[in-house]
Image (tube, rainbow, N blue to C red; front, side):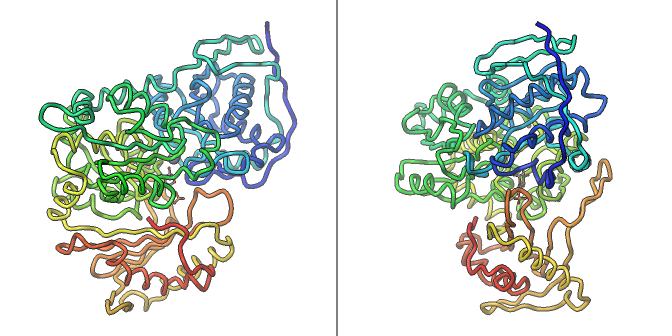
Length: 562
Ligand code: G6P
Ligand code: ZN
């Protein structure tokens, strides 16, 4: 049967501006008549001439509204001359899996249906993000173009009678407006599992997890937080590496509301896992992922916490434990600006190039494509490499297990050894979530004003007997070394003359209100085993003093501390 497309008139919606990582709004906003349709049409329009005859990957973390959104995408894509969609079974694909599929199938891009670590379910968040040909999140130039289109959209194309099931794998072919339109539904994890097997030595990892004659099983607890990684954790950890489905993994069935939890792997939202690993001292390592599987948190025995900044530095220092890097070589390292500078010290020692980019994984892509970057990470629980163009939670855990298998040391001992060699960048982040947007903007304006004062550099601040002298202060900006694109207003940095830093930024991933992030980074050469909160207390007080945060936001305490 031949299907016919129609043109449906529409009017623009305000605020369809993609944030750090795509458009995120409450589900009920995406459900408004034409809201999702408009945004999808604008993504396709922004692709221009490349769209006709192209193939796109479609999938996401399975959160509420994913299926409806996929049905809309299928009907709009068909009407716009897309030749083929490759969709994860039941619409399930982790963000790293989408990135990998775009690269393996060499397609134009992928539409990822996720709001990442934001809660899901009918009362919570949904999101749509576009990844480009290299597998990475679209750059600002693309998302800005999409936003401009959303402001003037007047119609979208739609194939109303196209009914397409995506619960079973297989290929379906349709005739739309006289053209062929193909939907291939694929297994959600096959391609990703193959990739992980190419990168890591699964035989060695299995020996670690199962134990062998010389050592007992290394007891892990892998927590998918009811997100998409459950599918991949089952395949990789249980089926391939022999982990126990009862004792080594938890919350591995993806739920469309993530079981009403906040699927963000940090000490606050993954407290449940932290408590379990603390209580059951037989566990050697705990790990958790966010809703769409790109973030990770690593804890050792007794829930010894590894900051993402340290995790990056340790992996950088031990890349020779991972077969992929042995064969591909190690080019440079990178981190986002607010991420503590621990990896910089490893780069200096190993003689590797080091890059500091704005917050957001999209800023790593060009460097990787140019062959100048192998490993990178962010304080926001992201770690990854040039095997794909997204951060990759499961990859990070497999990297840690490879290092542990190779060194035969505990997580805590690996960290302690690392700090003794390099010194330690104490780091913490305070989040003040859902502040009033005006209040948060006023605070940022106050900071801009404060640092613009010529007398600010050289000024001293004292808290709890410690004095810090301002060496430099600015609003971070970045020129991409490859395409020379310029990004500004990426966070207020105050750098002190002892190397400590305090940074203020507004989150770009929320769906309502404003989240103020305060990042604190301070280096100690010798005193490396103290509590971060104690060590950083004076600097935190200095940051609160400079920003007048309590006055502007009315907040006495942060919502989340990591
Ligand atoms: C997403 C991006 C990350 C980025 C983070 C920042 O997770 O994928 O690359 O670091 O957002 O979030 P924020 O809320 O601080 O803007
Ligand atoms: Zn995510």
